[in-house]
Length: 205
View (cartoon, rainbow, N blue to C red):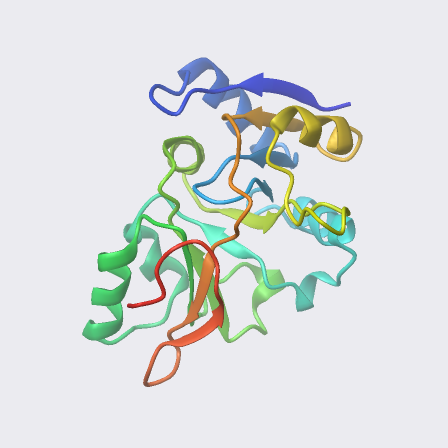
């Protein structure tokens, strides 16, 4: 059964952040707020946890297109191949923000993603998500919490999310109501930016 904790974006509690980090390091799954919809995630370096997330989403891990939630752009060189200056300028101009940027991956990607040529990078404009990653010391995987309702694509109420997911995850973090629009996904691996999914955020980049 999952634990339910409340965090405030203005001043996330260090004690609760320690608890979240411990859960992640032990291979636990957490649901957390971002600047768009609530995300389901785990430590990118824990294969068993990654398998669990993939299973919950009903997909094979090696085929999963999970985003890496980063604290800032300093994580880039760890997982992303060298990118042109104009690509870096686009990232700097729009992050933190409600975007997922698809970038060329490098050889340091976690073992399970070695065959992938690209990686989705997110730096959300949400102090809770960023504080979790900073405390953990490396990115976390992110996949959106979808709703099975035909009319509502994403659940925004953390209490309802807890009700639905408490048997599947270890921790649900209530950071207030979430958004109901996912991030805008932009592919930056070609000569020109390609819009993959229009979501929250301007697409004029």
